[in-house]
Image 1: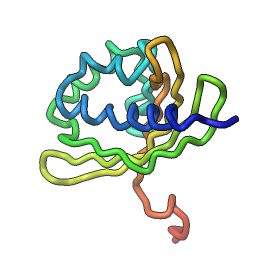
Image 2: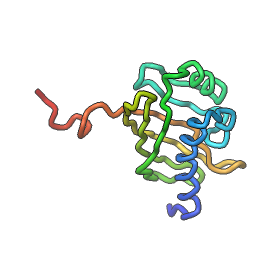
Image 3: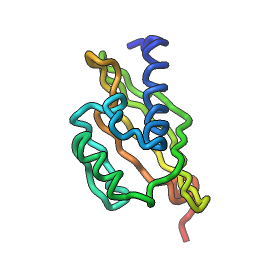
Amino acid sequence: MAFALEDRLAVTELIALHGHLVDGGELDRSGEVFTTDVVYDLSDFGQGEIFGLTALKEAALALGAKNPVAHHVTNVVIEEVFDDRVRARSKGLGIMSDGSCGSVTYEDVVVRGDAGWRICRRKVVARRVPLGGLGQEA
């Protein structure tokens, strides 16, 4: 199925908006990025899944100063398109207050509703080894 350029741009901007809102502390605007019943999967970080916007805000506040000071997203790729639902992957860089940084892959399911495109499921996968571990065997 063809994915209209306008929709591709809307999804890409939606994914980018997350970092702007979080970094600015505008957690009450998360509904502009996520559905109210979002599933935010942080299992790769030992935190399990977070369900809903309220729990997502509470988790961010609980993490406090351990949150990155800057979230940067790049390499957005729309992988699958089903009517009003798409799968997207992107790369994320988190810059910490001490200047260290980490890399993740965001695996998103994005749905179109009355308010436009919103992420209904996000899995955050930490990037810990180069080449996905290829060639790392001892």
